[in-house]
Image (cartoon, rainbow, N blue to C red; front, side, top):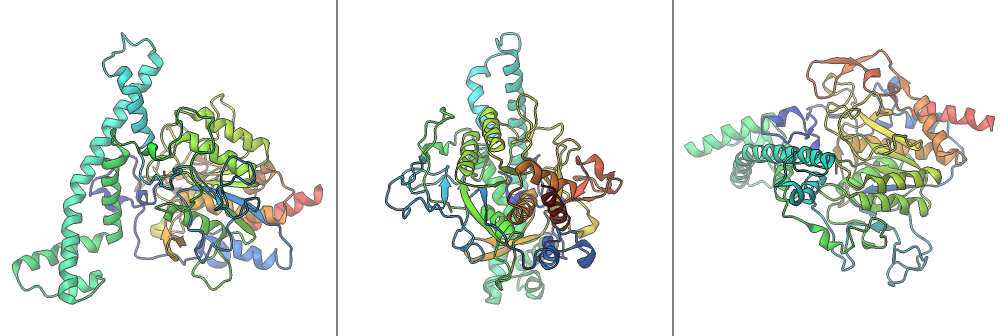
Length: 534
C-alpha cells in the first residue's frame, strides 16, 4: 500500500528513514483547499479547471451517472461528503439476510466487498510487505543453497535479490525507529507536561514558547520542544514513528501472518467469494480521502468538493496497512467490471508481484469489457521505467494495457516545486501528471484533511475521467484515455525539479510519455468534437 505517511520528505530524513520512503515537505503556506479543481490562468494554480468547465461548458447539460470503483483501504460510506455518492447493489434485497440474492458469489454485497475480511466479520488491518512474503516463501528452499548447487538458477538469483532487499530494508527501518523513538517519546512526554501546566487539551508551538519552566528539567523540556516543533510538525513525528514501528512489527516481520483472518485457500488464485460485506474496515482514511477527491459532494456547503458530480462510488476494500495481495486485486478488478463500474481507481503499489499473471488476466478482462483503470505511480521519487513497481500496465508478455492511465503527482507550487518531490516518474511509464500535494478531502468521523501522494493524484484523474464520461457515456475506455492524454497541458521543454533531488532540473518530457498536466476543460472540448464526428 502507498501509505499516506509516505509523504513527508526531507525534513524527516534526519530522523532516520526507510529506503523507499518518501515524505513530502511540510510547508508553512498551504494551497487553497479546492486548488486541484481550479484553473491555472484564472486562479494561478495548477488545477484541472473543473470549476471553469462546470460554469462555461456544462451549464444546463444533462449527465449520466457513472460508477467508479475504488480499490482501497475501505470507505466511510456515511460520511457527509459521500453518503449520497455510494453505489448500492440494488439486486441485493437488504444486505443483511445472508443470501446471495444476485447470485454473483458475494453474499449481501450491498455496497461492494471486503476482500481482506473474514466470514466472522473480522478484518485484516496490518499486513506484511510483499517483499517479506517472498522472503518467507523462498527462504526454506534456498537458505542453505549456493549458486553452484541451486537447480533453478533464475529463481535462486531472484531469491538473492529478495534477501538482499529484505535485509537492507529491515536494517534501515530499525535505524529509523532507533532515531525517531527517543524524539517521539521525549516530545510526547514534554507535551503532556506543558498541557498539564497550562491546563490545555491541545498545545501548539506558541503555547510552548509562552510556557514558563520552574526548574532545570522543565527548561530542558522547553528547549527541546521549541527546537523540534519549530522544525517538524507533530503529525509528521507521530506519523513517521507509527510507520517505522508498524514496519518492524508487521510489514517486515517474517513471523507475522494475518491471512488466517480471511480464511481463504490462498494458494487458489481463482477462488472468489471469500471476505465479507463490511466495506469500511478498521482504517478507512486512505480510501475515504480518495473517494472524496473523485466524488465528494459539490455545492453542498461542505469544506471540500470532489471533481465529478454525477458519480457513484463502488467500495472494494482490498488494501491493508502493508502490501495488497495480487489475488485480492485481481478479484477486485473482476468484481468492479462485473458489477457495472466504468472506471477503477487504484491508489496502491508495491515492489514485488509474485502472482502478476492473475492481475494481468484481470486487467485484460477489464480491457475487453471497456473499463478504464487509473493507477497511482508511487511515492518513492524513482524511475519506474527501470525499477520495480506493481501493478503495471505492462503485461508479462511485454504488451501494454490499452485501458490504463499511470499517474504522477503535480505540486501546486509550494516551495517553488512543479512536480511533487516524492512522485515516481518514467519517460516510458507515466501517462500524465495530476495534482497530488495538499489535497483536501474527506476522512473518517465526518472530518476533512490535507493529504499528499500519487494516491491523491490518481483519483483526480479518475474524477476527470468520470466527469467526461458522464456527459459522453458513449466513449470507449481507450477513447477516454486518449482524450485525457491528448488534451493535457503540454510543457515539452519545461525544466522542472527532478523528484528526489534538491537542486537538479530536468525537462518534463524526460519524466513522462507526453509531458502533460491533466486538463478537464480541454478534455471536454475534445470529447465534444469527437462526439460530433460519430
